[in-house]
Length: 271
Image (cartoon, rainbow, N blue to C red; front, side, top):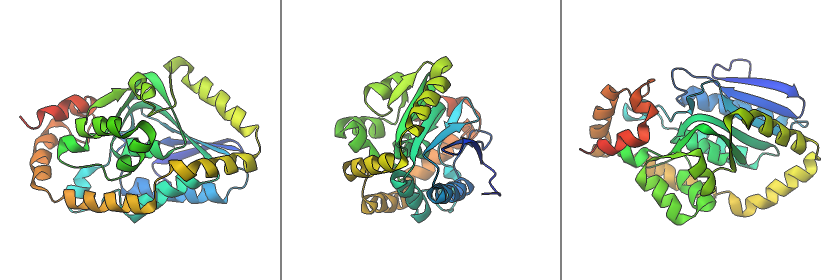
């Protein structure tokens, strides 16, 4: 992991890693991100002492904004191929508890990333969640269609995906998409306290409990593959190119009002 550019790892104790995302200007996920996450999960699997990994962002406005969609519509690879699917499933099944500590916006594949984590805690004031893909002519392809029905139920999954709107932390907590929203001033301390509690327990017990809960909580690889194929087909739809032509001048992928208010902005693209 010596060549990592977007992830930094703090090993405060042998049992705990804190992984920080840093990919200016707005923490877009791209191929480099996926390569680094794949290397990270390999290191997690090899470390016999590791019990908990906490993911956070260096950018207070964006946890992970979304995938760099320009790479897809310009003919590049998408985040929902074999490598992304492999990473998500390995993270979910790792003998390590993964915690997303969310400040800022996490949308699209960013939201799909935190759904693959075991636990999600968020800043009441600063966290925003969303699956905007339908609003830009696409469909989710990185796991939302698999995770959301299991986590929040069918009807709420439909509301989130079809509505393509932003959810604040209190709403996300109320529908069960995150474990808890916490006052921003208390978020670090409360997550740290929970991590200390977890690391006081035997890894064998944590591993066994997670594995058995995963029997009903983790989607099958074939489900991810089906959504991946559907996403790859969706990229070719004419509506995607038409909507991409509208969002690029609005500041897509940049620190802009469009990205800060994406849930509201996508509703106007069909006008």
